[in-house]
Image (cartoon, rainbow over all chains, first blue to last red; front, side, top):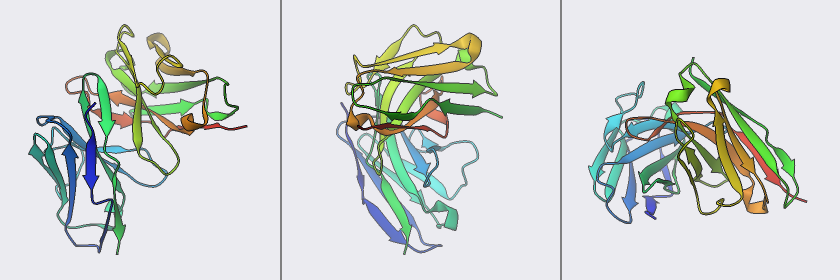
Length: 107
Length: 119
């Protein structure tokens, strides 16, 4: 099973700052990686798929990059509604796995 | 509006059973694969089970294999998860999620239903 490790666990930033979140896979997933956003009491929302493609309706301040085993989600300028938990996710051999999440909190 | 609505959660004793349902609307349910994903209190997301659009192909996470059964009724636009031999560690919010046909990412999620396994 491919394990995804996210860092940092918590990111404390102010609105307007840039957020950089990392996801590392235990083996190559090529570009088959997604990012989800989850706010308290809500379901996850697909943000980025195939490592760098924004899902429908996702603002341009969200961007993804990487391939192989190292991936990054960048939020260029944090808006108040961006403070949430972010998960990376991959699928291989008919198993979907998620990272443990990065919480982006208001500093 | 594309929507998934889960139901059937509740409090159950260890060893008990529960059947979750997920009602789909706003899209052609029979054309989509579906997943169940759960989230234990204060924890991350864990994939539970997958079912193909026809129901002919099914996969389970090792943690639930042999205890949970996924199924669907395309005529009723509904997805199900039969959970037997429940354990305390099955306590979680259970989400149903639509799986995109082209790349298997999950693009539509329900709001979840809470399952609590406790005596």
